[in-house]
Length: 328
Image 1 (cartoon, rainbow, N blue to C red):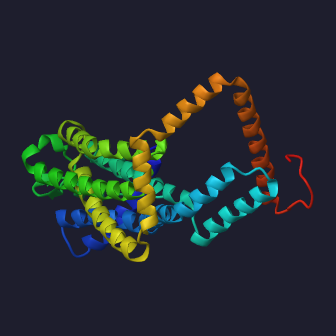
Image 2 (cartoon, rainbow, N blue to C red):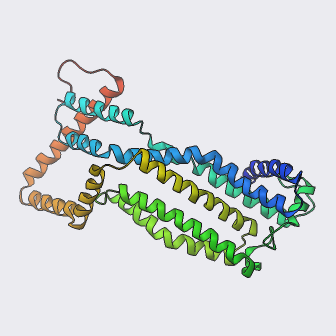
Image 3 (tube, rainbow, N blue to C red):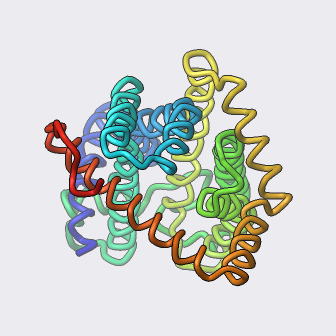
């Protein structure tokens, strides 16, 4: 299955090498080919990356209003009132043009491109007597004799520690800086009293230290060709510059209002004081002392769920009832 990714990557490399090989010889043509492979892949996904970053910021900008609507929905008892609130939520998303699914697309291009390049380099390293993907036998032979900073592109990095070290340090630096900027952006918009967002932020913070260590170990001891290290460094340099540009645009066009910062600070305070746990514990003790209240609360939650379910059906069908509904 991974062989499939090899063909588009080798095709892009073939086109760039045809261009650079027409006026450059040997290693420099292949080095520029790898650089412009990065530019091509990152250029394709740059608009998608921007949409993902923008949608994340828009989600934070609309959160204070959405939180207020959600709070009202939690206590609604009337279907028509619930319908009004759900319509307001929909209109809020439409007004902000919010679509969280946009953040999923970049990975569908980045990962196949990396896997495709890895397959191409491994096959070029292993055979000089057959084409690889869309690269001809002549391309393969030329690639095998090319070097970057005096290191053969198809050799494993572990075979040239002293020569590969500056390249590896640069790649790790670009990766770490990009992760730190993304981590800080996430911190500004995370609600710490919500378990999933908080744990995702902690996970990213842990990855800031673990990812460089893992990449260093794999590059230093694993079967990683020098080409992959070079591609990785170029790719994350491009990503770092792109991230800095995105941050500048976000600060200018989509600045976070004080309401968002205040909401984050309040969530940190609630998390530190374990407010949710205290409320759950108090409710548990109250229900234990009064079982009838527990049954009444469960019945109220069931009625509330029925009201919301009925309201969602109405909003989906755009058919508001005139009289009382079944849920009421």
